Image (tube, rainbow, N blue to C red; front, side):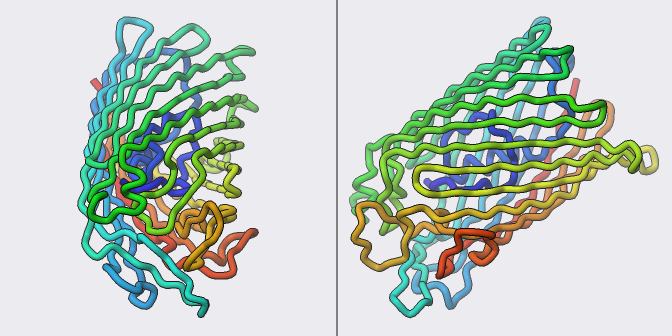
Length: 409
């Protein structure tokens, strides 16, 4: 089980999606399901006419740590392979059903401790052997389409040898003012149970977490406004409360509060420039704050262009994203912290991150093929505010590659 990063692996700012398990691996699964989809207009309250079968493969690979920053263990980090299969079908005249199954494999070494011994050059203690994990999850959602809105409900389960999760959610939309304004709302909750591997052998946080659970409750409210024929704006606020065992059992120095309240404010602007070769420009922003002291800002932009080459239709979208955050109040690299709560997790440190990539899609009448490639780099000096005096040596750099096929019939 790998605890979720403070910021998403890829900028998929879609706060009303169900986030079932709150872990890095589920974040990656969600990205491969949604980040590859070519964004379009606001979904109308009309049931789609065709069935769709979707297959997605995503590969995520973290760059190895520098030898000089590792005190012991492997320098290699996680690689994750994700295979997803989905089936969407209209049902009768006013309903649709969407089902998805995901199979995930993970291997690599993981940081379990980081200590600054006072010389200003902290070292990472990595797991000595490569971790091998598998995960499978399944979800189903149903949507009811009305003349001026939709209602949706969802159910998801996730299982691996040391972590199990069950989640349910509901969402709705309402179109008003001649469909120029759409009101959005969603709620989701998850129930997770922990069973760390080798708890009796290693003890510590693994013993403390064995048999423990955590749960989350999330709300989102937003509004999408059609500004003009070529412009839309969506703004929304989100709230999540997590409660239970929130410490990372696989870290040797990690004691976190048993509750966490998270708040988000997001905005999405879309502009289609007919005068500039029909390019669609996307601009996204999200502000994040929680009671642990983490504050984060994320800005993303992309440009979408349709192309026709020798009778073949393509859409291409280069994208760029910048993220920076302040560290948690109890984040520390001290060898023996004396406070009640403490963690040396790099995901709770202050840093800035830049990701750049491109999505592309070939589309025909009944099928489409989608590709995605993204690189991510992080550095403690890239944050605009709230920088730490010492950089965490385990900050991430990684690459993701995705390919998917959709068939409509």
